[in-house]
Amino acid sequence: MTVLRFVVISGSLTNVSMEIIESDKYRDIGKGTELVLSKSCDAMGEERRRDLLIQKKRCDAHEKIERATGIKFAVAKKVDKGVGGFVQVDSIKAHITESMLDDPELAEKVAHHENGHVKHLNQGVTDIDLEDYVVWGELTVLNGYMKERGVDLENTDLLEGFNEFGTAKEHGVNEKCGYNKKEVPAAEILEKLCMENTGRSLLEAFKAGNMELFYELVKSICAIIKLKNEFKMAA
Image 1 (cartoon, rainbow, N blue to C red):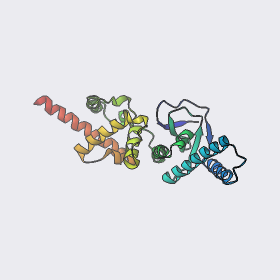
Image 2: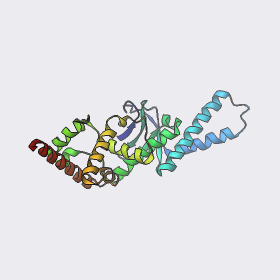
Image 3: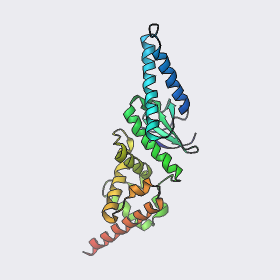
């Protein structure tokens, strides 16, 4: 399985022997669990009933995130602790880890993040690579500006940053998302810089999959920073 993008709660995705349950099968598991619980529980032990209730809660949460996003989610079991979900690149198929389904509210935020990746993959957006589209000298200026604000732009995944930034704005902040540490702050700084100096939104260009406009806006803010730096030196 080739994995492109995933939500990190903490840690990283290294487990390649995970068990995958397809969406339709997981829905069938939910229906079967509900049917068993609806029958007489006199002969059912407490431990068995507890396990069935946990399974029902997970299946209900799974159904809810599919309704909320409008896409199907396969369910991944035996995944490294801390991984919330991911998208398989070759099939553009979204996955949610089963442990996330124990917290329906968190699962929905993770699902919206993954749905963002699905939308961008369908638009042909697989990465944000400033080095390929911005002149080196201009990018150096931007890197310096960001470092003054505590951001190492060269080692920051901006695709994850803008994806989670947009997800949080639309669906609420996921306090447990690992991208809140550096990726989201980097996206927020760039968005603010762009809005203040061009009146246009990097985030909206990204969400629309208009990467040509996105890179043009980055070039514009690089030029503006460079100009401001020159004025300071001349003063």
